[in-house]
Image (cartoon, rainbow, N blue to C red):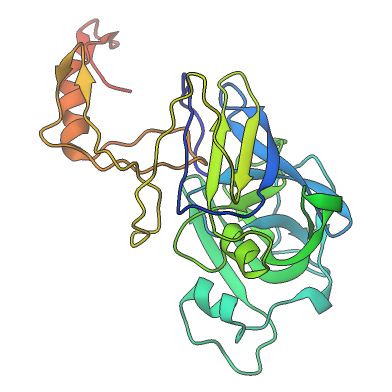
Length: 293
């Protein structure tokens, strides 16, 4: 969940890993890019419904969670639904392959919990890996056991502000903890294909698995198949124009992150943009200044 202050006029993207012949898992998307700043799915986990922020920049799905007898280190933001209630029989041990994958360490024999810490642009989350049933929007609302995070300590996530989401839907690449990879392992889908369409007016859809993309004037962007860097990037390199003039020195590799509405530039394109933007600003001394915000 990255910082969300910039307005985006429209987003319409295709995230393609590889073709699939399976039936898709389809989620309706809720929320809005602007001014809400959150695009999320509603999903039953355990016996309750939760809203999960769709984040292609994070590999781990997690919910805000109540841990019994945890007081000093447990902080959560006000959310729409009751906190997920941790049950100790759901805990994932340290030696579990998905814990080893997430934390990139060989595990600790005899340790019955898997503790993680994930950093975001606007905060961080501490939690425990757990397993529970996800009710998926497919035939007869089938239930499948998924490993996800019990986030009991969230720092710097807009304290005191009630958010429309209860946690994160992690769709990042290059990890077995990714929801799509887990669904493939459970034989829910044949291949870990992700496609989603987001409307500036709010809503849209998310497909995990095979899906025939609609025609009729819709332009799709195919993502690079190379998963080495763990993020989604369009096949085509980007060029930056200002008033019709190209201002970047060389084509840019662009990273797509559905969990962020900030657009970040590397040093050269940022400086080039700063040099082109003229914004009359007046300081207390009455002098005109130019500043890029």
